[in-house]
Length: 537
Image 1 (spheres, helix red, strand yellow):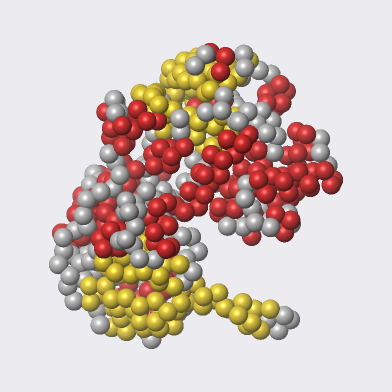
Image 2 (image 1 turned 45 degrees about the vertical axis):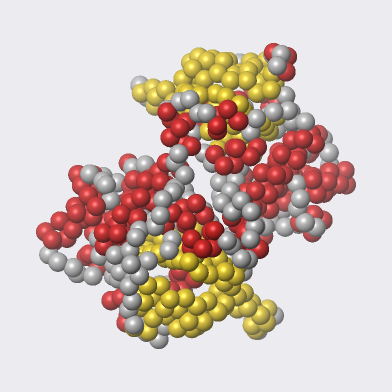
């Protein structure tokens, strides 16, 4: 392909973050081209420098803390790193647009969807009034928002995650850019919504003829959309190839490691023991109140008539899209939400007990949450965090508690000397190990794992999955594993429950469902995650 087909040419790019006298080089010697109309993917784990590289194109880094000691970024002959701010503003959002990872942080919660898109059109195109509204409706229709005229007055919180991301894409496309930079555009979305957003981007790219720079650590997603791939590690590009070449014959050891990082293997080979947890006709209904007297006119049936029996030493995987009720189900089982129906744990009915009577049982039922940073107090040391449950339940002397904390940290693969440090000093994967140690230190019978790997890179996910399997085999632990990541669920679960709109649509042995899903919704989830059987039964 000739040099004239290059829309963007990045040459020997370097990025440094400067704090006082300290200079940290986070990107070094990065070079690549983006051709007109093609999709180039930048892939790598968190901290590899891919987002910093992409943000450098529009100079969106926190300047002057960030600096470019070397390199150039040519856009149709102009070096974007040397352009005056006024000229750069004419390119930002107009000829080069960006879609960020989390749509809620990209949208103003105080303004309607219509007003926010109109603002972009007014700023770059000078459109106002009816002309701006007509173009906004056209954009919302283009990105597949249903009944766009009704969404003009909607606020971001009134839309689903997928719809919010579509609105962000509509804003980015408002000025028909030549290049769209998509920074992890589907990470926060369910697998089925990810697939729809991916198909939307491909369709829009073909229709508008724009180039796409995709930043992602999801190689399944990259494989479906990219023409060429650049693999980044520690601020450098270690491999660059066509998508087909890279996935069929990766050359660099790091690329091979990424491609082999999909969680795999079988769940822990624990024999099924007696029923540890039994749930009968569990319901969590939230009342909808209207009128001056706030009378209940209907209910949101978040969990509606769910039944299962989970043997000791086994894992029940609970899957479904956001809003399906799976997390609500987990919280209800732990008696953290009010519910109707029967919950029996080790033969004891929990549903009739007061919160005070439930408290002694909480030591046996622990939880690991999705976001390890949000679930760990930043003001407590790791030792205090892990040992908090021991103090609350008055388990042992102070010396015994200290030893239990040390043992728990060793068990999850952390240096016990780190117990004096604080959560912000650890990586995401290490923080999740701390959260697992906090649950493990109480020697529970049941651990609820609520999306424990969704915020982690694939290689770290695999390590956490292997840790959970080994702990289950060693201590005969029982897991309730809630996730929309079906590859992780398959690697951990003995039983599987598929939930949609509060109801179970399919339930049974996990390997049987993965091999031959019976329900259409289950098949859709598996197809979106690249896990469907080759041929339908």
